[in-house]
Image 1 (tube, rainbow, N blue to C red):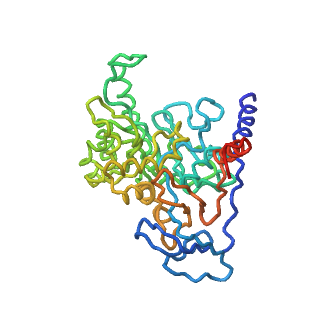
Image 2: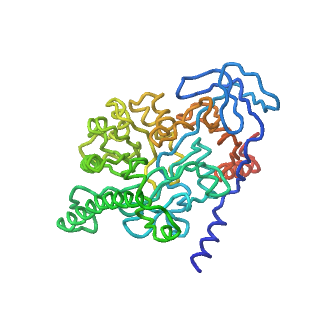
Image 3: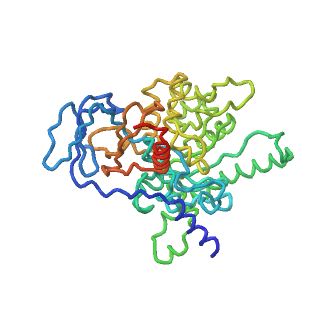
Length: 438
């Protein structure tokens, strides 16, 4: 009871004040803008969307009856940025446990759903939207098998209407394949080896049991009694053992990535590598096996003493040059919710260290959508896709650029956030002190 009371108190303290937008009620025409479609180049003209969908992009568009016409006066329009893996909505303040709901006890939780724990009132969401990130693949983050992620819209009254896709995939934290000799709490080598072997066997057993359970479910007709006897953990594995949904394998080191690919081939399952700091070292293996990489932490430090200082920065350029399918994400899923707003800065750093700028923009829009399997709806500006986009006064990969207005499925989003409130507050302070002149 005490924990529930604390949770309610913190929910009130840290809830954002923005009101979720209502559904789009009339056509909206954005004219005289620079439309960055991502998929079909740049168009100097207009974009029209109605009922949450883009209906036309062209140099000149006549507004339909009842349309709201907005003159952009040369401003830019981009598709909403997409966070490939994130803990946003599950974590508020890392150091305050009652504001975190990203983990379950135990090592094996494939039935855990991220979307039911998603907090649409998180204070982090408005600040994230203010940097153009309008969609996030929200994932749990504990144990060997964390659970299933959900693709969430950065606007909504409840988790139900903020859910875009569920499930988007199953998350596995691949065990370390080496022996750690340092650290404050040293574990004997034989115990490390035993833990690794147990974890790998557990992953093998998961697929085998899931496949056996799936065969059993095919041979049984569902009755009322069957629903009472369902094994929720094994039931949740069915789309993954059938290859209908991907398994996100969190792995950074070479041996982890290699072992994960061989495991996936042996069990005939689809995987996506998350993290991938050493992915550039295994590029041929990744390309040959058509395994995508969600590259986390472009601004991270090198993994090893002998690596170049900019190894993490140029990782995306190396993957692009090797022909590996990849996208860029901020580092950390469960505890890194606040980092999501820095997504365009991560892509900008990759562009500064060899990744073509157009590819860098694609790596946080259309490339993410392709990896997540939602490119038929978002990721680029095309007729028939969701009107999930934002207007800015410049290139989102430039740190000085401001996002002026965002739309999610045609809904006009409240662009206020805590940072802006503080900015206006202290602007007024210095104006009253006579330091800031009008």
